[in-house]
Amino acid sequence: MDFKTIQTARVPVRYFEAGSGRPLVFLHGAGGLDLDQNFLNALARKFHVYAPLLPGYGDSEECAELRDMLDFTLHGWDIIDALGVRDPILVGHSMGGMIAAEMAAVSPHDVSRLVLIAPAGLWLDEHPIPDLFSAMPFELPHYLFHDEAAGAKAFTGNIDLTDPAFLQAFLVRNARQLGAAGKILFPIPERGLRERLYRIKARTLLIWGQSDRLVPPVYAQAFQRALPHAELVLIKEAGHMVAFEKTADVIGAIDRVFDEQYVA
Image (cartoon, rainbow, N blue to C red; front, side, top):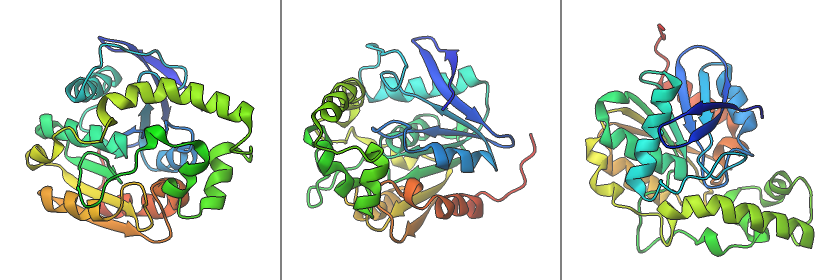
């Protein structure tokens, strides 16, 4: 992926940009953008897509000033201001969905369309979310993909998940990325979002893989009950990485909900 750079008040931000039409800002999950390339390219055939990296991901700078959920939420708005876009479709996956929901809650009149793809942010004691901070790479495909074998190949590029060289590189990279993500996801991915969801005024689309073993579909119903204007789409034979496994279905769901003619 080719990235550009914009400057925000706190830190330079690296971002992917492609396409034309209605602006759409995509916020990635804790794993970064590596598996989102095909999905973003498909979105770019219909929208003007911006996909920023959070600090500490890829070749982006780290930012110690981002300390808590509010900091990450305001950083999201700083990015949108720096990009110069107004009222984008705001799309977030997993951790990115948690941030997107917070952004729509704190600034409800600036988001009219919101897509949350298996978002984190809620916690149900009877359905605890697995701790990915302690997971080894060979354990991740089970939680992330419906088709674990195909997911493992995509996740590693066919490299042996137990290979020492791969493990070393994985652990170094994860330490950097999850050092940022841990500020809002560790020890559990819950920072009081439930109490703020009522403030969201945006027309909201929830997208979930029926086989999601990381943030299981019971959380989809919890989000739908808490959101004033939410539609839920469950996608068969898809796990937590639903946009990777079922790209066309996810794009189709976004199209069906937000099919109004856009005038720039």
